[in-house]
Length: 174
Image (cartoon, rainbow, N blue to C red; front, top):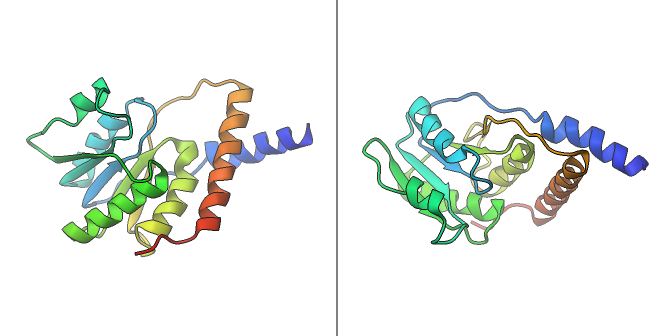
């Protein structure tokens, strides 16, 4: 019982209350894979607010996903890149952005995902995209979560496991 309470309390403080950066000018926005919870539309809003010319939509969903078919269409105001990360993880997404940044000369990017995913996303992008301070801006998808206590316990346990795995894996090879 003590472990569950500690996971819940500390998980809430670390993950559910994770800090989100402020929007700053950036070269590109990446929308990390997850639920279709408005994150794709939010990525395009962030691109406009940050003056980013490119939105990268992580697309681990497969060719039959109707949301991605709609969101990945060409747009007149921004370049849209839809790619499946390899591997299909946050680490794969960070590596994808690292490769694209090297090809395109990007210096600063915005990463968006669930608020509770931000600490792990920040760590992984620091490891695999760039360790230059300020090169990665991390912003939470604006949404409310109406989940059960058990669901939150599982989310926090998963995020702790992901953080430990990221620390164990260390920096991505260049």
